[in-house]
Amino acid sequence: NNCTMATQDSGYYDYTIVAPEMPAMFDGMKLAAVATVLYVIVRCLNLKSPTAAPDITYQDTPLNRFLLKSCPILTKEYIPPLLWGKSGHLQTALYGKMGRVSCPHPIGLRKYLPMQDGATATFDLFEPMGDHRTGDDVTMVICPGIGNHSEKHYIRTFVGHSQKEGYRCAVLNHLGALPNIELTSPRMFTYGCTWEFASMVGYIKKMFPHTHLIVVGFSLGGNIVCKFLGENRTNQERVLCCVSVCQGYSALRAQETFLQWDQCRRFYNFLMADNMKKIILSHRGSLFGSATKMEDADLSRLYTATSLMQIDETIMRKFHGHNSLKEYYEKESCVHYIHNVDVPLLLVNSADDPLVHGSLLTIPRTLAEKKQNVIFALTLHGGHLGFFEGAVLVPQPLTWMDKVIVGYANAMCQWEKQKPPCQKSGNLNTPCPEEKAA
Image (cartoon, rainbow, N blue to C red; front, side):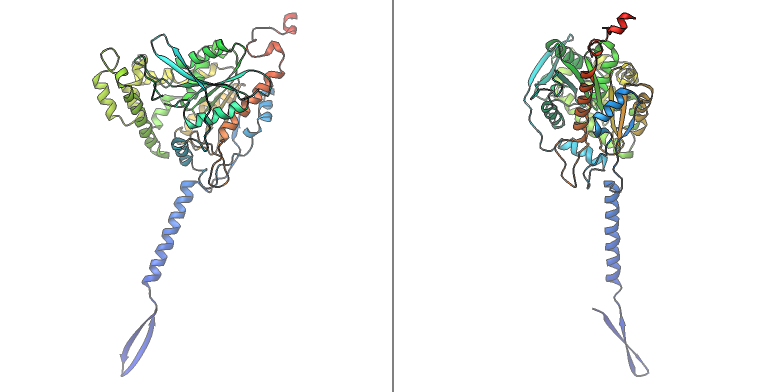
């Protein structure tokens, strides 16, 4: 493919072989393009990031030592799928679009609870598939993430796993979240309203007087359950422990970070706002009208909202009569109540969660440093409610998150089982024999 060039000088021809430069230049551009694409893939998928065990913050107490020993997954290396599992965005996207792999279909009963303001709370009750390993009656009371309910895949996967381990499960359906359930009052779920969750817990305590409770909250649900337990110490009666996964702790502090573009947080904000608009508009007839707190102008502003903060300012804060967005966020965030929680508390977050800014994680870390009952586990990877496990590409049906919650609950049940009867949950006011003698 070389070309030949002839020149005449003094009657003689000089034949010179000239190498083609253009094709070589194109090959170099191709290599550069491939290298660039590979670099972007490595960076975006975070392939060079190492795997590691969660960073655990806790105080050295007999209970915490027992829990970490009895729930070894908390101290072992978390290994996400090799090709995409180190990307918090892909973990979050997979959770958001697909939920889980090979999702089970647990069968439960839907319960309807009338509220004092005319609202109707609903939850789904799932009975255990066998006896608990301790022989005790234990119920998981579960609060899902924003706009979620018992039919979401990640909830069904967790419930199915818990049932097999001998747990009864009660899953709150956030007010207004189920598409086939009409609102019976001009109100829907908010960031920190605990009324529906409290009603569900009260029902479980009444119907199963001997059951112990494991309180579980995902994302926004984590805020609700921690706030519920901290609002009144009587809410902690018969509660063995609480687990919160991927919550942000302070809506007021999170508000600023949700307007930032790092980690595409502003884009996620837009997507969640769009989902909230759809939920609100699906109940337009119940929420807007002459007999409600909402006006036509609020509906117009809702249509143009592009962030959760705009929706909270226009709609959500008015459900409970908050005068400002700041007041709404302050009064509905668990950061002002969580220090009152005295039952064992496991707080789980991921360092690559694109929704929860790293600055918010000083809240659970400081709490674990100050309170003996708190363990804070921070994984390097996992995204927002992802925590998928797997070898290379296809994730496993059960996630690290599912295994950790049930493993921690099992450890707490074992700890409770070996305690003297006078020290068991629900008998906090009954003195032990040596205390009576004193």
